[in-house]
Length: 168
Length: 254
Image (tube, rainbow over all chains, first blue to last red; front, side, top):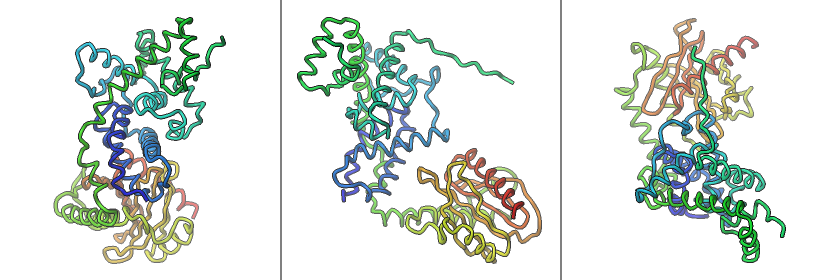
């Protein structure tokens, strides 16, 4: 059995994915903490030869979906607070990335998850499918939709739809 | 030349094509500026996302994330139990107060033992309950007999919590019971039940908080209930209402 300390090697990447997914430092570390506790409680179930990173990301994905379903985590909204921005880059670069960040959180979370797992975590499409428990074909179609929508948002082609609520 | 498949454009951007496939996509892109522009945009996105989140991976890891790893499971359990007991002790003196209204008798006779039972048994991995939910009918019968009043486990599946089972506990002056529920993420809710000795009366839902533990408690005729969990207040209230309604339904058909 893998030693429990082995999980430490995965924490930087788990934190990076959680931050990218939620756009919020505290919500992200809450998610990582839940993931670590759950993973450690099932550490004995991790089979030798299986990929711990994929296993941990899958646990995180399930927790994230459940938490969102229960309304614990606010979806980062179109016109709400801008997600925390992790880099201090050069000014021009900063502006470009800020724009990218703003558009990223307008993607539906399922599309954002695929895009981040592929681009940031550099998972293969097959690993991505295992993390999300969906067929590879679904990974590909979500990736296409995510990339197309992000391109439209960045080009400013897509208007932000403001939902009107009836005030009683 | 046929247009490469959509997947090939993705794989090209994500660097997973073998040499000849890559050469084929490149040749196509040279002659087809629309596809070339799409691929360029995707590359810019991917590179931007990588750079945007790269710094997070080199941040120092917050201590709270390291703590559960450094403790051995047995030690972690002992420490958790010790902290739980300590906080119960503190809670009895200072922390445990009803959020609304004046202090009442139920805080001492109901919430206090419910909180203790929750912190002691809910982290239990191997033996969270004495009698499992597969013997639900027997469980209810046994507890009803020991408590001297009808004791039923409410169904909370519609809120995502399934019954793990229950156990008999020593109460203030007689027996009490605890039912335990768990959701898909492993979060646990306990319902503490004791016989209401002061006679037939009903109370509204009342709320108490002890650190991160929330408790809703109420008296309904012959039984008093306390529902405890580390869940947001609003969410737990939903569960309490569900439990109350379900018990009403079960009792009326009993």
